[in-house]
Length: 423
Image (cartoon, rainbow, N blue to C red):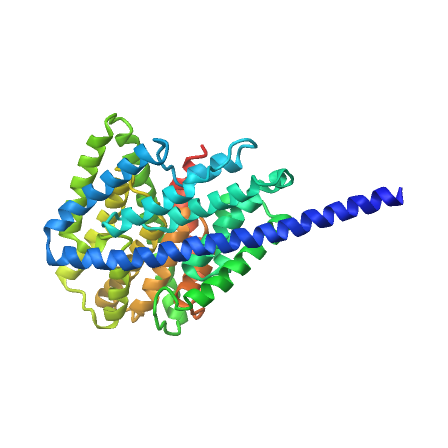
């Protein structure tokens, strides 16, 4: 009896050791993928955007070129199967037999890269999330004993991918829990904790700079009601973003010929980029520019109209990018819209109501509020944005506004782009 008990104990210890090593491997591979995709995308997006600014014809050429390349790759390399984004992860975690295939790593890596560098108005976050999830899924399949930890190891890849992009292991962990798993256990904490620790260590040595170089200012209690107002507005805008994506997917699904989808989508995306170059790619270049000049910007009629047009048109262009074959989701668009929405709200309050609020703070809070409302993940948004600016000064107002924006959005429309796919 004692011998049998000792054998079982040793067996459990061996499994634990394997689980720890496997989680570390997933964390490293996902961080390598995330950092590589981020660096390459930033580099080539900057180059192609500069070319387009000097030759407006490229705004018309790039979208149809990128969607055509993605379609060609799908037909020749990726088994003629479309990328479905986060839905692919849910299909895997909800099934005992269905797994993410290895080719999904390269598929989402290449498609995400091509989409963004040629102006597709999404981002690489969802591409990284699905590719990292595929890493977790593939590694999990190597040992039969890991079948019971399938969801945990997929989430380990996802959490590590988010950690690599934003330098925030806490945001990575919480995103994997809030959006993907929904279940917390010791095995989840062990696998994901080890994976994000490895991913964060790797990312820290590769790129220790925060995503946005922002000097936020101390907040004052008198500004809190205005921040709450921003949260409500962000919740409404998040519903608009999600409904746009879902509506365009439904409408374009009735178009049988893919080349027709590409032509229609690319045509509208090209015109939007020509009208509003801020919409090019993930749009972080425009956010950084706004941050730099936010303290000196005056709310003129033309500036206000530009902000409003960007906020209203971005969800449409994002939707058209996705239905035309581009890779991505609502992650980067939410941060982008939130920054513009925060600046517009602060500018209107200061100009017409003499509110005395700080535009830079409202931009940061707006980013978090929009992300929280778009994916129904307030704590992910809270830690992700605080780490993206490497500053926790606005922790309390961001927390309050993220909760308000989420429940405002949920009250109007109960689904996100992600959760709708599970209905």
